[in-house]
Length: 344
Image (cartoon, rainbow, N blue to C red; front, side, top):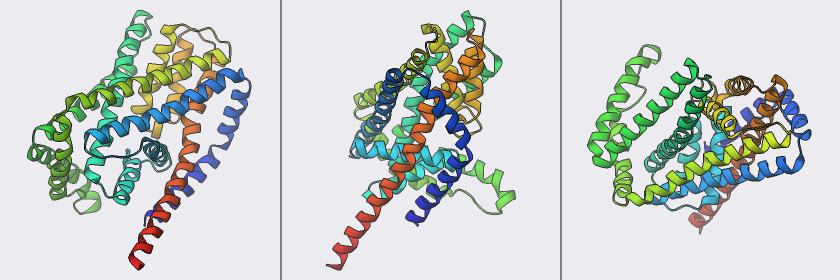
């Protein structure tokens, strides 16, 4: 089943890439027009960003009593990102990759799921720290719109919800189980008229909460363990800021710190608060509009947007396809080794 799911994801990825081939060609042609050393530096920083994500997950795993190499986690991050884009399901596809690897390595899938939520929470906090500065800049330039205000409020609301649930888990497995069961009942009421059955199990919610709470309580007993993921989340956003700056420099477009922070804030915000996976189509429009509002010509804004998204979205996506294939091969070898041991 695992190999079938991975094969299906790879097939969907192939279809997705073929459908977007003209856009990829435009990005490649645009990047070729830039100064190659700045583009090269941006690619190096993007590679460090991937390793940063792997290190973030490793720090969270360690705090929850799970040991895993950050190189492996970096591969899983890329593969999960790829799955979320080609098989969008509210992040469930990417989480399934993490949980599949957890089963193969024989550690708690519940703790892995909570680690994913913690990663998102720290990631949101890292973005919010920069977003607040960006909002101040937009207010001073009289460029703050209602859409940005609503999206910012939604992001902060999501962060508060995650923080609330995680805090419940740190206090009591029963309290977290009751909260998840309440959410399950709410979801079941919505979907029952369509599927005529229970979509989420309240019993599984309590079982999940019990296992997850053990890891959260372990993390609460060593609060300093949360400092490293929080720091890495901030450096994660700084890396993306540097990439956007390097794109400006690659095409010799005048910049200011305020413009970089404001445009980055809007682009990153709509990666998260978007009806499309990874903000496909939405981020491109929002970032181009933000750049033109900063008195950057439409042509230059389009060049920056195409290049930035090419480096931070499309290249990791293509690498994610390769990472998924690598994880599949590792899984097959692991299965072969296990079968050999059983035979002997």
